[in-house]
Image 1 (cartoon, rainbow, N blue to C red):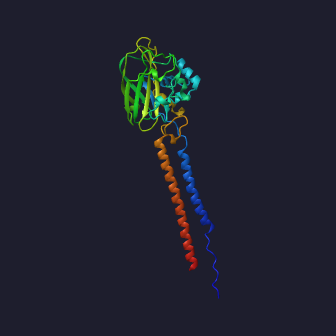
Image 2: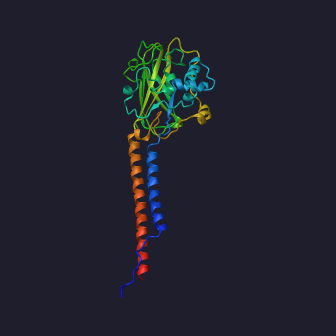
Image 3: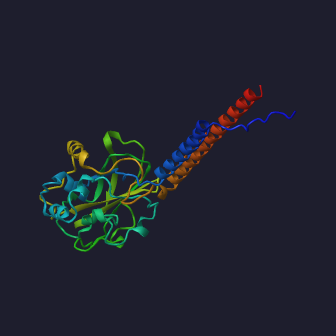
Length: 308
């Protein structure tokens, strides 16, 4: 008599569905993390010169909605109020020490960013700080401190403020070089600059290159030596003004900034993103492997019960 025919073992549909679901969840999680790694990040905003007062700080202190000076009114007419609410964000995300190569003449104050193009206006009515040759106490209002080097340059004798600022207008020898840290007492970096002998209106140009990132920040401060100093000195925004305008700001202190910057433009961030993606993919593989193991164990138990 022939042995009875035993039906082939089949994995119940619910268990197979669970396997497929687990694998799909793992793959979806990895894909989501991959998208996060390529998503544009908010621009970083980290400060501006408060002494001598930078152009953007002076206009923000006047009030974005109702500026007092004609030049600040013209800035708002040209670019709107948002650049002023984002007063601490004149940056390039991936400058990496190559500011002179990537910022063209005539675009130094804006860092060649269209958002801040009004800062490049070549005119003699920008609010200006009165100065004299010798030691000058510099103040930089920092909203997010970083390790880096802040370098200040001044325009050469004979500088013409009615013409667009060029790199060749700046003395090659800095008036100050200051190493910044990841902390800032009372929200300021304070250091000393040595001003050379000058007369009339000049400009101090700031380059703050981070050493913990390729990002750099820029600023233009108008100054007047001797006779002809501005009747009303510019003021920097107060802490109360900064706090009051914070809700109107479009910038934050994470990521590395720029108009259309991706995390992958930053080498360090790219490595972190790649590591995160690799981990995510590895995690999804573990989930899938675990699901397969559960199914196989279920099959063995079912087979054992049937044979018994």
